[in-house]
Image 1 (cartoon, rainbow, N blue to C red):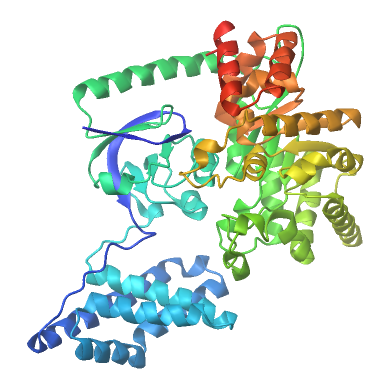
Image 2 (image 1 turned 30 degrees about the horizontal axis):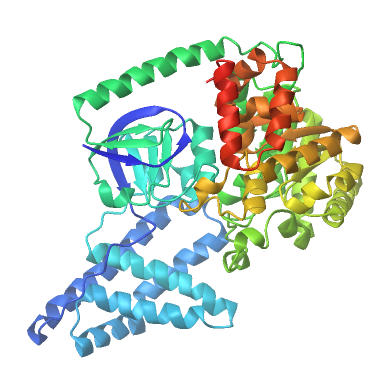
Length: 579
C-alpha cells in the first residue's frame, strides 16, 4: 500500500479503480536506429498509423457533425487534409530513410521542428498552424505507440480519474455518472478543477505532483477528499477505516440537511444570507436542497467554454432564464464573463499567447475590449430578468474607470432592448467584484457607483500575496488568514457599509468553516459558496454570538503572521466546540 498526500479540494471519500488519463501529455518518445533492411517495415508502420489516424478523425467527425460549428468543422477538414497530404507523407518518409531512425522519432522530430518555426513566426496564421501540427502529430504518435485514446465523455465504467491536469472544458463534458473521484498532479484548493469538483460533488485530491507516476490504471484507490490523502492498493485495515469515516460523514450530512429551512442567524439574532455558487444552469435546481437563499455567483464563462466558441445571445438567454425560473424569485447574481487566465476561449487565440495570462487580458478587460460581445451577454441577462430577480456583477474591476465603462455599456444594451421591444426589469442591481488590491484600497470610491460588493477571495488572495493558486509548489502560501488579506476584507466591508450597501463574498473562503466566525466578526453580510458547503457554514453561524466573533476578528486584524492567526482561530473554535 502507498499513501500519497495532496491538497484537499473536494470533500468526500470514495473507493474505486484508477483510470490514468494522460491525454494532455505524451509518454517519452522512443528513439533507436534501424537498419536499411528495416526501412520498408518502418515505412509500412508509419503509413498504417497515418491511415488509422485519418480514419479515426473521419469516424469522429461523422458522429458529431451536427454538433459542430463551421469553424470546428473547418479544423477537422484541415487536419484530415494534412494527414492525406502527399508532400507531408513524403517529407516523413525522406527523413526516415535519411536518418534511419524509427517512425515515432521521425514524426516527433519533424513536428517539433515545424512547430518551433511556426511558433516563432510573427504571422498569427502560422502560429495557429502550429497547434494543428501538434494535434495531427499526436494522433499519429498515438497509433504508432498503440495508445488507446479514450474521451472522458465516452467512459462506460465507474472510475477514479487520475491525470496530470484537466481542463475546465474536459470536466464540464466528462461523464459525471462514471467519474467518481479525481486525483491530479497539479491544481490547488481554489483552482477551477477544485471548484468544479465541489460543484459536481466529486471527491478530489489535487496537487500531488507525482500521482501519474505512482498510480497505474486499474489500481484500487481510496480517495479521501477531506484529508487530501490517496491510498493506492490499500490494505483491509485502511479500507475499513475509510468506510467508518464515510458512515460518519453520511450521519453528519443528515444532520446538516435537517437545518435546511432554518435561518442563518447567530445565537444573539444577527442574520446573514447564505447563497450558492453555480457553474452550469442545471445546478440551480439542486441549490435549494441545501438551503440556498439565492445564487450569489453564476459563473457565466462556462457557457462559453463548453462549446469552444462565444455563446450566442439566445443560448445565454435560455440558460439565464432557466436559472431564474428554478430559483423561484430568489435573487440570482450573474457574473459577466471571466474569460482569460486559465479559462481560454478558443475563438480568441490571443488569450492563449500571453506570458502572464492571470495578469493580462481577462475578465472585465476582455469584455470592455470587445463591446459587442459584452453587450450580447448584457442583453441576454436583461431579457432574462423578467423571469426573476437578477443582479449583475463585473469581475476584476481595478478602478472606477472600468466600472463606469461597464455601466455605460449596460445602458447601451438597455437602449438596444428597448429599440427591439424586448422587456426587462427596471430594478436590476449592479455590483463590483473586489478581487484585486487596487479595488480593495479604493472601495470607498467604487461604492459610490455600486449597488453591492462581492469579494472574490480566490483572486484577491492570489494577487495580494503574489501566489499562483494553481501552482502546487506555492499554493500552501495562499492563506486566507494572512494579515494583509484580513485588512483588505475589513477595508472593503467597512467602505460598503459606510455607503449603505451590502458586502458579500463569493470566493472559496466563504465556504470554509474555519473562517466563518472570523468573517462574521469582520461584518460580512452574505456568504456564497458551493451549495453542499451551506449546511456546515450554517451550523457554525447558529452556534456563535456576534460579540465573540467581533472580538476574534479584532484580535486577528492585529496578528503579525498567518500562522499566528491560524493558531488563534483554531484555539477559538476549539474553545467553542466548533471543530
